[in-house]
Image (cartoon, rainbow, N blue to C red; front, side, top):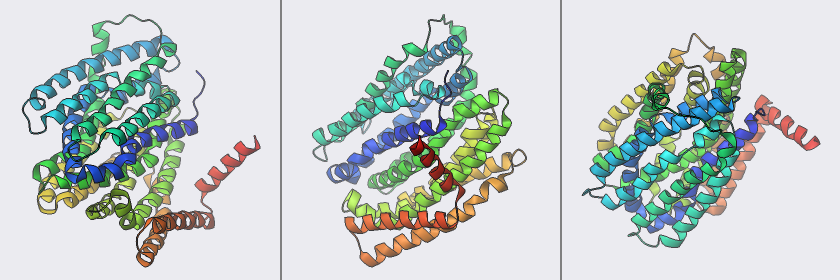
Length: 479
């Protein structure tokens, strides 16, 4: 097969991941005003429950399948066998847990109708083959098809969600596009696969290794979704789930810009490991850290600087708490980006799943304990603090476990410069908001000045990543 372009795949994957979050985000200003924090809280709480069953049904096959396809990328027969074996395992798991979900939550619970609609999303997990295309480092097909489907979902929200009573319609508008999008990806499969014989024994052999990857993925997702679940149970009211959900949406969109490189690099690094090219892996890791620091600190301090101006404009009145939550949660941009580099770009491709599992289980435990203690006292702010501490614990454990394999001091050193540059930029942006007040014009001025200040700082410090990017662009122009 033709050697994939990491840069192109990063762009495609970033587009795909951001689109997955931006699709509902585009509708957020409208929905936050129509459904209110209560309606958003109900949907988010029910969706957090459904997520556990989607995750359990997939049994870790997303990351495992992506890696195995990367290993078999150059052998069409082998990758066809892997595809069907992993897909059948995934389907069996999804349909089993979909049945369990329906029996527990689809019959007689408080938000029964919402749970029933979300069952469509659980079943859709069985037909999600994006892991196959990502394993082949072909991100274009997923981006194009999901763009069309998700745009249809956005239009549906604006057309059909009209009042605070339309929570069920809103749920359907977000769920159906996922199902249709997953089914549509199958159209492109025939040209990558050949006919192969599959035996149940061949399917079951993938269960153990996928479960090994499932455990850390489970822990990661549980403490990612656990905040909403525990807020729904322990917070003073369901509105707190709504506030937390809105703040998390903004942070997660920003996070995808920083962490998409990890998804792109996993098959590439797996391929390099299979070829024994450890020098390529080490060089890529150092560059990846440099990249996430440059982008991560800029976004982190930018969010802190504009939060108070942004929230009233974007969400409307009654969401002031969201601005505070955005600032509290923002450090995870750096913590998750760093642990993403270590975990997805090093530990998983080099088959050190054990270390990856230990780190994310540590995060899950920290998140659960701190949620238990803090949510009752501080509601959504408590959940935000718990999330930041959990992500930091994951990073610390990973760094400790690989301290003898890699010179992390050299990898982390660039963070100091970007922290200072980002901090100065954030202070300038915040000062502008304090002096000029609130409004769309003020927000635009803050963003423009922030970008200009950060870019100027990188030029003054002669940042290598910036000049490397400029050189790359110039070479493209000359061609």
